[in-house]
Amino acid sequence: KDSLFVKDKGFYTKIHFDDILYLKSAHVYIEIILRSHQKMVVRTSLNDILEKLNVNFIRIHRGFIINTKYLSQINQSSVKILKEEIPIGKKYKDDIVKRINLI
Image 1: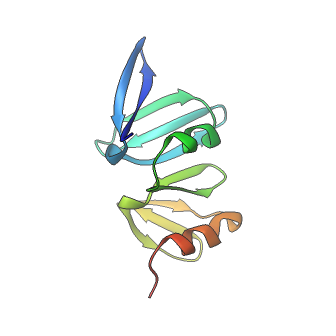
Image 2 (image 1 turned 90 degrees about the vertical axis):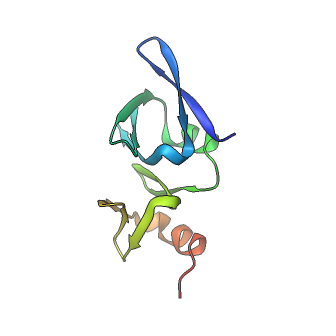
Image 3 (image 1 turned 30 degrees about the vertical axis):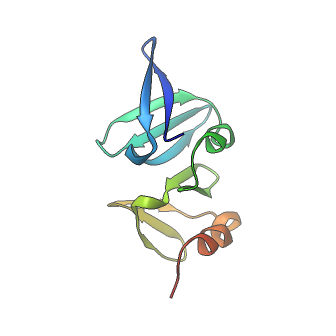
């Protein structure tokens, strides 16, 4: 269970969890942003896809799930995945703080 298959132009393409930086909700579609700066688009919900991902993934906002492996910075209102800044929702803030080692 280290990957998932995404339908892409009639084929199911394997995506390793390590290649996923974050997932962004765009209405009824989910954009999967990959390390290679590619973008895969699937029609599903963030809740459904979160169930299929491993423990490295955490929901940080109504519209975002991040891969904590690539979490480089965090502040009161956002996180940085590599160089991409993503907002943190108030509802999800406590979860993030519990999951990371703060000193």
